[in-house]
Amino acid sequence: MTDLDVRTAKRPTLLTRQMIFLLVASIGSTGSFYLLISVVPLYAATSGAGGMGAGLSTGVMMLATVLMELAAPTLLSRFGYRAGFGLGLLLLGVPSALLAASPALPLVLAVCLARGAGLGIVVVAGPAMIAELVPDERRGEALGLYGLAVGVPAIVGLPLGLWLSVHLGYGPVFAAGAAASLAALATLVGLPAARGRIDKHAGVLAGLRDGALARPATIFSAITLAAGILLTFLPIAVPATSRGTAALALLVQAATMPLARWLAGRYGDRHGTARLLLPSVFTAALGTTGLIWLHNPYALVTGAALFGIGFGAAQNVTLTLMFQRSPKTEFGRVSALWNLAYDGGMGIGATGFGLMAGLVGYPAGFALTAAVLFLALIPARLDRRRTP
Image 1 (spheres, rainbow, N blue to C red):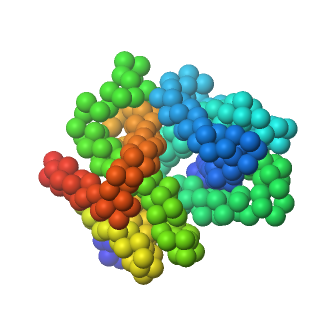
Image 2: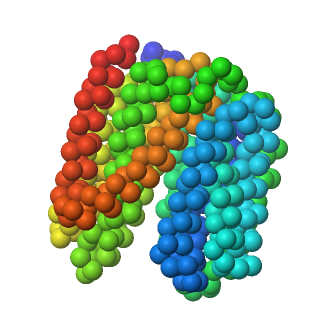
């Protein structure tokens, strides 16, 4: 038996009972989220609230998500992972069913507020639990597997929710969203009841004072900024005759992202995570340049594929590095900080690009976005030099 065979034979099991239950619970929670994410704004807009109501529905939900991400580490420390995740599932599921009662904007916004809070809990609890459940030498691959579990619902749920709303009406979509989350409550029996361990003297944003955490978080926020722009504006920016190409490009991006996230974890565990940071940022930047040629379907699809690969790999690399550089008492806060970089970057990207594109046009806007990502190679290089 070779040395490689010995090392491989000693690798601890990844798919433990608790890990399987956590992955199933994550599929249920994100499935509920993605089924409704595009349907609720449409429901609000077509029911009399117009574009303002559609924008408010998404804005309120993401605001609640970010605020809950700040509070989630303390909540998980006080009540435990099982109770916290269960609360998140309830907040995602029960309000979804209430949407069928009325399209009135106050009800829609209240539901979005509750669902955003539920999402904030589960997206912080999931990675934190994995970081504690899995041995250090397999953490990257475990986080990659988690990425697959939360990525597949995006590929299926986004188009399925819209299809159901068109062919069966809004009620079945809301019922499906509620069922996906509430059915996942059955998995709570397999989740750890332990409380998240946190340093009570440090806040979530305190991690930004530590360069070892701030660098990957900042680099990742630059990539999520581009992701928010891509998802929001690509269907609008292309010519009307190319909407099908834009849909294909988004599908390709959504499909390559979780696969790259998993493969990056497998590679990182075996050869070192830090060495993937520069390639992931460069691939995402290169993919973004393909979006400049909005009239070229090959450039769009290829660019979306490259961006999906870089974005997926960066998700795994940045989160794994942040966990590697933190004690277990900080895992909850690391997960919260990473998710804040994710959601904050997407929100700022979509908002800022909307203002900028009106001044310079879409092609120039995508070129400037690519430039931001190429600039992110500088802190990525600096981080690589300072990683042992």
